[in-house]
Image (cartoon, rainbow, N blue to C red; front, side, top):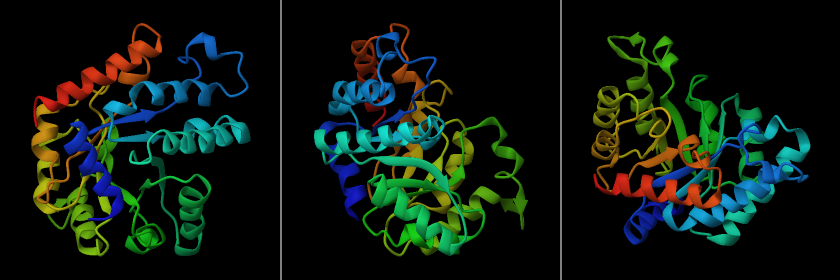
Length: 270
C-alpha cells in the first residue's frame, strides 16, 4: 500500500472517518465577512480546514474555482494546500483537475499538480488512453483517481455506452486494474449510481473509490459504504462539498457541525 492510501486507512482506523471535504469556493456563497479580503478563498477555506480537520480523511479542492479567479486564485490554492499540510501532514489533498493529455503534455500537468501545487493526489481522465496517464501513475506515492462512473446526470451519454457488450465504465475499471502496477490508482465512482457502482467493484475489487455525490446530489450512504470498501480494506473516500461548505447558517461552527454529521452518518454504515 502506498503512502497516500496508507494515510486514508490510518485516518479511517484512528479517527473513524472516510469523509473528504470538497473545497470549492463559490464567490456568491462565501460568507460576507470575507468579502473585503484580497484572499477571500484562502481565508474562508483555511477557517473551514481548521474547523473540520479532526473529522476528515482528505480534502479535495477543485482547481476550476481557483483558476477562474486568475493568478491570485491560483496563489490562494497553493497557500491553501500548504496550510492543510501544516495543520496535519497526514491528511492528503486531492487536486480535482481531471487532467488527460498526450505524454509530453501530461508530464507538465503532473509537474504542476504535484510539484507546484504540492497536492498528494489528483483526478485524471482516461479517455485518450492509458498511455496518457503514465506521467501521473509514475508518481508512486500519489493517489491517482481515474474518472470512471461520474455522479453527474449526463454520465450515461458516454460512460454507460455499450462496448463489446459491456458498459464503457466497466472497461475503464478493468483497464485501470490491469495497469495498477504501483498500487496508486483509484476510481472516481459516483455515489448516485449504486447499481452501476456494484459492477465497478466486481470488476476492480482492489481499486479504491473516490465517491462524490453524497451531499447535495443525494447519494445513498448505506450503498456507498457497502460497495466502496476494497478487498484489501481501503475505505471509500466519500466527498461532500456544498453540503458541508454552505450550511443554512453561514458560520464556521455550522460548517464544523455539518462535517461531524456527515462523518457520523457514514460511520453508521461501517
